[in-house]
Amino acid sequence: MKKLNYYGCENGSIKPVSADMGFITDLNEMYEVLRKCWCAETCPPRMREKWTRENPSLGQCSITAFLVQDYFGGEVYGILRNGGNYHCYNFINGHIFDLTSEQFGEEILDYSNRILQSREVHFSKNEKKERYELLKRKICEFIK
Image (cartoon, rainbow, N blue to C red; front, side, top):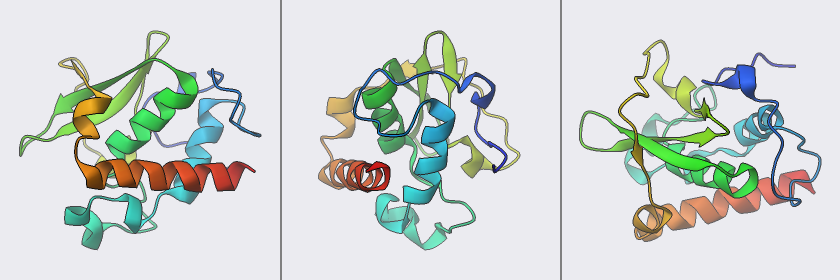
């Protein structure tokens, strides 16, 4: 099995709250499936030219965090980044899970100034909602 490379993976044995998860029994398995499903088309258009299979989580944070929330519950939080965008991650059962943290390489993120994120606000942008729906379809196809 590949080394898990996301913030919070040591607590990733958390179980899904949704029965629609197929063979996925915990968050660590969800991460492995996401790594296979992330693609350039699920990355924001402004970042697609930088997306690679070697860095598949690039630009995938908000759509991934809301999908994880669908299946594992909890809240989605964001930390403000340079440029005014939020980097989103999950907070479930008292633990931080950032399944897209590896996109930042060696940079250590500060999760202390978190702001609750709204699905309605994020998905008011059609392109983001479409990327979320595409990633969700890819996951559903993979787990069947």
